[in-house]
Length: 307
Image (cartoon, rainbow, N blue to C red):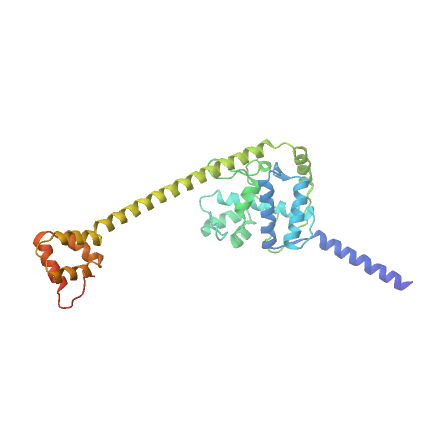
């Protein structure tokens, strides 16, 4: 009897441990980047409404996240991380709105002078993590949480009213984060998104804007290619003109028109005309100077053509 009770307690403890491990996801930079890419993909598919995603989008992201990582995390775990990324975006955005800071897209680092960092961290202590680790996925966050504007900048998420709070919830390092906060507000946004799942005019406007942007880029590339092709044709024509002007045939024609050219000079000149520099000099000279130069080059002591 006592052995059964012991086994029952062990089973309960194992189930409790499994539930705790399931509810707490340990996020690394690699896993965060995968989630960010999945979120961007859903935005581009038009599955975002009011900075939230519908149930279909979350299911798709859970499935693809499992395929890419082998981790079968549920919607709540991904949504918890989504909330962390939202706070991170607002923090980084508020940093980059200041002239003292700049973001390096290739490295993800945010640079600024020590005084500017000290002033900002004094008001936003969570920025210490950003100062150390940077934000390699800021470009994706801009796509996920904001709409592109005409001047290339991004606005704060609508729920924050464009204001940056003086203090954010704890922003843990991306490599060691463990999520525990509730996602009730996300559920409310999810319901609102489902009500508008069939019709999304704002998204279509964004897609049309992207298409116009891509068309402008394509036109610019086409114009650049046309200019390169035109320049290549001009260069080819110039080379042909140069070769035609100083060709061996042109040299022989001029040589035939010269008077009293000895036979040995004539055949020595034919060998000399294999050198393009010699051909150019020969055709550029006039009258007696051409004849004198030809004799000197054909019968120089070294008997070597012009190089």
